[in-house]
Length: 265
Length: 304
Image 1 (cartoon, chains in turn red, purple):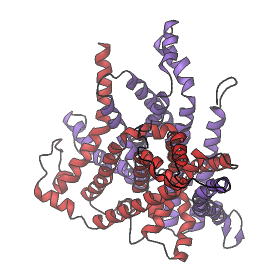
Image 2 (cartoon, chains in turn orange, yellow):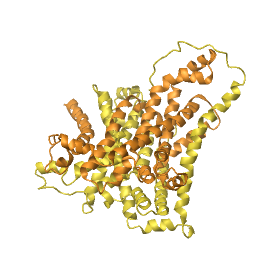
Image 3 (cartoon, one colour):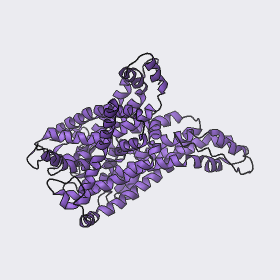
Image 4 (spheres, chains in turn brown, red):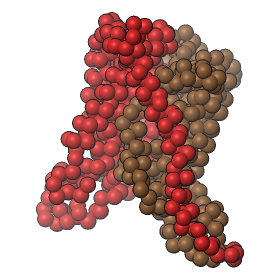
């Protein structure tokens, strides 16, 4: 009896997560037939090849999606390129200022970083990177970088220093030892961190909306057409936003808890 | 935690051993490694931070509180304050309770733990805008909720919930979307914390006759304190930043502080007033963080 109630609770909580996504997909793939239907079917009966074609042809959604990917890929590269070396330094060297640096990284988390896009709009216009993928990727990196530093630092801590020292003894230079010994061991975790940086950028709305006009990311595009575009287009956009995230969370699921366990210390 | 593929260095290149000067170079090395990220944060965090504050206090008449005066006189300001705090004050505790419950339930799952973990953490990858659109699909006048209510005979036909005429339902709709989306981050942080708590502590308490509730209240909860603190800080700061879900579901019928900053920037093109709103959000976020740091600080005799 107790077991049954427990099981029902688990199933209910799973349904609470999944059913809304299913309903969004119904609306997004069903096209206008489903969106304006009353009462609505709870099964995907109405979706036809026609409605799916109209889903693919929604104006402006594909350029925005490509732009989002471009921004997120840049953010991913910047976060790892800047964050991983710092993480390595924190893990391997005892140096003056290490604690100050760590504190500084933590402090950024108490701030709503997206808001900093407001003055950046002016700076970006002056620098000529307003409305570019690079500009948006930079502020997104400010969001993802602290996370990347903390997570990579503990990844490197988990790799025994002795392995590296052994390589030194056998004549590897510091860089070669890092490349041949540490990097292969750290790579899966670094990849998971990179994917997380991608998701952070992919989902960010405020800064992306403030810093783009004509070349909007998917989130900024959807936000700007909220009040004017047909509902099925909005729902389709929502589905496109969700799908990559769901896949990415699946890809990093083994690291998810280690990462947050680390990031929360 | 990290995958421990024990890859022994099978082939080790034999080259000339590192000579002198290594230690001198090593001393500089950490600084070279952190320098790029420091410069980056200076340019894209600290300078914009100072600029935001400067922008908020700069008016056409010089430096002063003019922009804050405009905020004060903004017709939506008091609604925005009320809505923002109402959302945070209700959502965050419910999310914490829900996430605690979920992470405790997970400990007793025997089969399919990985699948459940994945499903429960899916919303972690979902933006507030997408969450808003998900619940919009469900809650519009011809949406799935109304269809279900209609088929149960509760309502006679399509009905709008998301207008200014139904503020309580609108609030509940946005709250639901937030609970659906953002409980996952609290859950993931707590599960990570639970994994660090040795099961022996609870078993010992159990041996001494503690009930399930006593074990949770006296053993698990205190040990989870650091995780709870982090989860609350992160979630609260993010909650003050949330606005797309509000715009997607409520349009301008449910103003929050950050959506006001957005409107002043993008629609009214008044950067000073937008910055003033931003400064208010920052101060509130910092204050919330400070409260959590003090309220959940380690007690005497507890490890930090």
